[in-house]
Image (tube, rainbow, N blue to C red):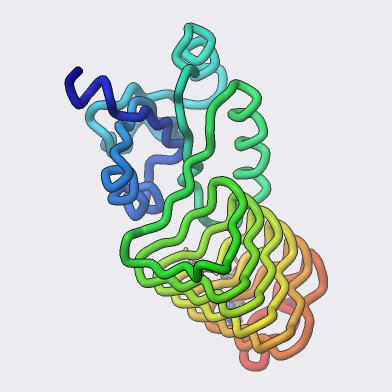
Length: 218
Ligand SMILES: CC(C)(COP(=O)(O)OP(=O)(O)OC[C@H]1O[C@@H](n2cnc3c(N)ncnc32)[C@H](O)[C@@H]1OP(=O)(O)O)[C@@H](O)C(=O)NCCC(=O)NCCS
């Protein structure tokens, strides 16, 4: 059998910057991108071998035609879209697709850390000892999630952000680029920490905080 037959097949949902950053992990895992779902037909296709789809209505008939078999998926959607990633993951797994966990070869994940399905850990990012990440979390480029942090599902730690030890982050919350969260602080579900903030107190669910020290944004 040739290589093409042996390769695992991958569906990538999202065709912009975050997908570009994840691309090396697909090659390293021997994955062949066979399908790409994106929003903008004007975007230059990222994967020449992939069939392109524009949303569920476009994709569903292709899956139903037997293409869901032995197909993995990755949700290459960054930003404040943790709940979207989790909803899409539910939908795609109900078709029998398997979530791919993308850990870049230049990232470091402690052997005692645990991760739910479909997480992304990008170049130079670190996930410390006994950290626990729920499914569909992103630890972006050069971000650090230190020892014993707990991230619920769909959290995004953006590039360069630092979570000190024992920080807890609720589902779908985001911590902006280069923000710092001090030890033992709790970030509530769906909260947004602005880029560059220094978080010294707990952040209520659904709130947006910015600045040094971080305060509610009005
Ligand atoms: C906090 C944040 C979510 C606010 O977004 P927004 O509501 O669209 O905010 P706006 O851009 O409309 O700015 C509104 C005000 O907040 C201020 N502001 C925005 N972000 C800020 C930040 N991170 N720190 C301090 N002030 C900030 C703006 O200067 C503006 O102030 P002004 O009204 O006095 O001019 C966003 O700015 C942010 O920091 N997001 C994180 C982005 C990131 O890290 N991306 C990485 C991608 S992987």
